Length: 339
Length: 171
Image (cartoon, rainbow over all chains, first blue to last red; front, side, top):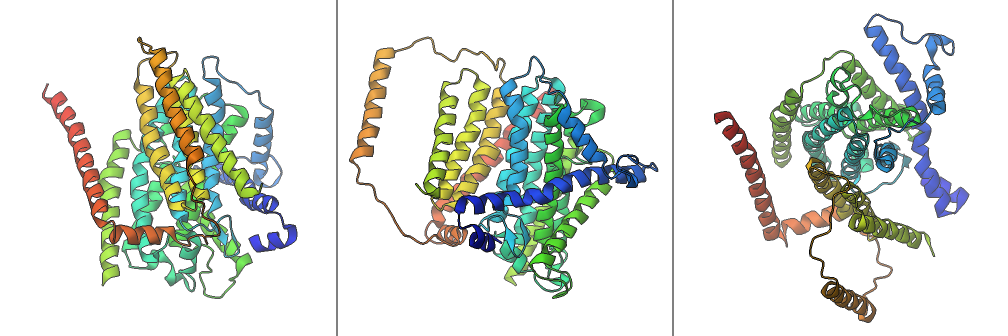
């Protein structure tokens, strides 16, 4: 894709600019659709109908209407808030969520930047979100916001460790950090996917990664930073209008980002599950997005099924359950590689 | 001026401006948060120098770890805003003399040095492989010593955290 653009435009600025905007073409409709889907899924799980009126068929344009409403809302900044940091925080959170898309391979023909340290880069930039959360929580000058931000930070920092160890199991098999090369190694039928390699260690690593990624994007059962029954809305309590929308948008962007990473590392990314059947750069986008959306749906399914963990249980799960198991996986895969 | 130059000046500007805010800001929390942009700018310059692994490690360690610790530390202090950072004793004359000497030396070195400019070197394809190989062969001893030091720090941290807890329970 980069080569085609270069042939047409012959200007570095425009080529890189367009390459940077391409993921947005997917993310914006995805976020609008996913918010509606989440409401529908929750409604059906609770034996309700959910939004039904806006747009005709099953209220499909409800989120578009919501977005238009949020755009027109007054931008309220609390009088005692720190205005500069309060205004910057939503952007930092969104930037950290979007920056991950720079190295996610959407197909064999499209990747923002095929850098050699791809997965390592994703782990690093997603940790920037913590700064944004803490900034927003502190600047709001509200105890719920600050408590929510503190919880979010503690949670994200702790769960980074098991998720990185789970990723390490895959990296050891692949022998590379580049996501495009990891994809290339999984070409062929679905039993070539890393999740079925060195069975069951990588499968366990996938489960660990998925659980830890739920915590990193603050989804149920790890949504104590915005536990509405105790903290109103956590670090987003004081935000309204478009800034609230930015937080919401960043959350959904992050949900897809972690799912995309899981799909790439464990489920072959853009590879077709059936060998040569429907493979190629264009179908690659289809397979990649379906795998990603599949995992996003699982996240939604879990959200409306499980109760929320307590703070101490949260730390227990990270440090005493996930981390030792992740270490066991890494060591087992390492020994298996030496055999 | 090509694209690389523009990107370099962009990152240099981010680094310098945010570093200046870190130093001169009256509000200690602004200092802590503007360090984020300093680290980010330095990481960008690392990328321009073909050191992709170091750039990412810079963000992961400094932003994800050290900056977090700093911000937490700042938030847990009593007065965050309007705290008087000035010390009581202010030696203007000796201070400015020393600063002028250091600044002059740095500027002199910058001007006098015959800078080693590398041109037309093909970018290294895989920095991680090179770094890994070097760690396991040439720099094995420093690497192992660093890992032992980190392990000691980890055990020490865990020990300090545990001791406090048991004291509270017995009291």
